[in-house]
Length: 206
Image (cartoon, rainbow, N blue to C red; front, side, top):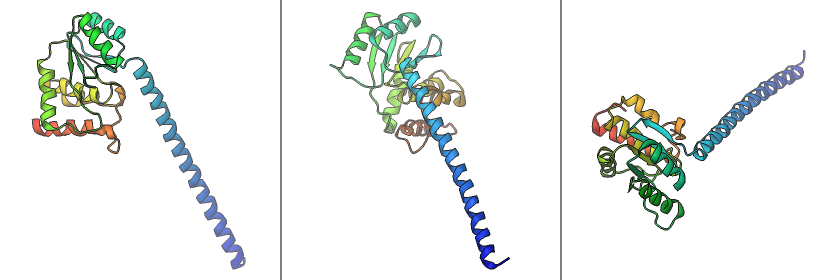
């Protein structure tokens, strides 16, 4: 066999290997995109359903932003005494005014504690949140817009620091189950960083 034929055969083999790897890469990428799309649908359904969860019966509940009507129903159903709004005061916006009115009409105390899902809480702000969760009359309902990130942080703090639940179990509150994505390159990872900072302060292994 001539050198030319050997080189042609070698080149053809390399092309086939490269093509095989391209197909594998495309399948992997397709799988990732598909998984991301499915997760997006899941989160969308969570939000549409209100992302409402009974975390500790008779003590603590979490949700996304609920309509005034739905909020009133949940207050009555679970005897909720305190509604903590992590979106902050927004007088004049329909969702906020409806929420405040519903809480008042159904006998619950409404508390504003505005935080951002995209920024780490300062140690002082974290302590303020912890104090609020410790002192608010139970049962408590905590919510933000989607009920995933800010609400997840408040939930893990409540479970671990107020209710005394095991750290690993409590941390499921800040997870994809409730729509929170624990990836360091995403802005909402600020909630994970805030929890880890608190863990160091209170002496837990992060």
